[in-house]
Image (cartoon, rainbow, N blue to C red; front, side, top):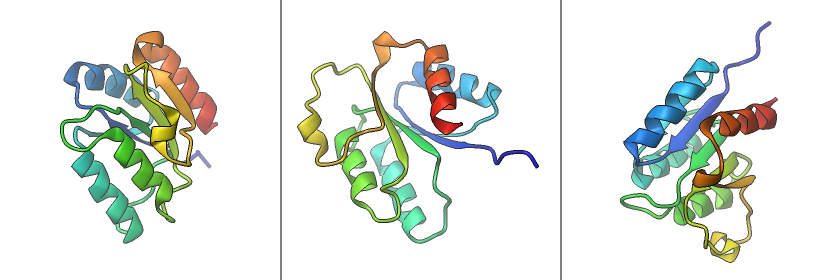
Amino acid sequence: MANKVKKIILVEDDPAIVDIYETLMKKANFDVKVFGSGQEVMSMIKNIEDDTESKPDIVLLDLILPDISGIEIFKQIKENEKTKDIKVFILTNQQDVQMQQLGNAKPDKFIIKANISPTQLLELIKEYLS
């Protein structure tokens, strides 16, 4: 039997980046959902709590969003009983994020967007999910 399609949540408000990542991940047969705001992610967390939505295998989280900081979202995911085991890759161009801002939990990967090509990111995701 074929493996279940892996579900990836991409939290990113830059349409150009969304376009590149989403296209690449869909080509690799991932189920990709894009959220452009923190509010949408908060709703997803609530839906997972209510068992109305299945957990993603991985969340790619940008820290700079138009409404809620990615740091807040990260804490919400990691402090919630039902979502704390979701893999979170922080994808940002903020070089100076202090790890202590993220609370007690650590992201599974902390990636500076400028330092990694979309293809390299895809390889990392595949490696993590295999």
